[in-house]
Length: 122
Image (cartoon, rainbow, N blue to C red; front, side, top):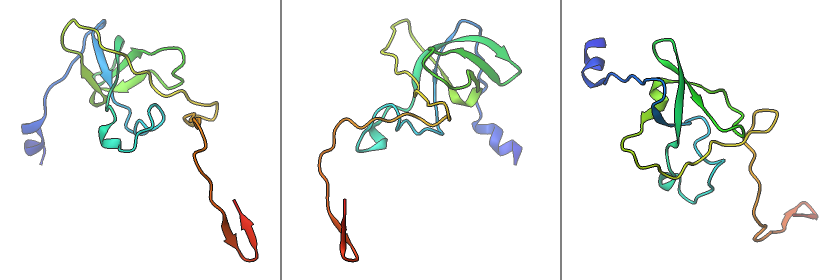
């Protein structure tokens, strides 16, 4: 089975100082931008600079101080930035002390009354 998997595998390696984009799959990017469709949301954050190579497949990135996530990522979560033009950086989600992404509502658009037994609940 390894032979079949290796046919599609590409060797990736980054040097210290390279710029990379970061994919944060566990958060599914819902904490940064609220969209109707997750398909239309951007998939990568960044670009961020590689600070240090930790082992054969782990890299430490220079994240902004507001990002309260661990700065070491597996190589499969990184994508090399191509070209010299700098793009608009999307920062990773800001987390609360209990490591949950902070999401603040912009406005309450509507409410509805639901009847539970003989009482109305909002």
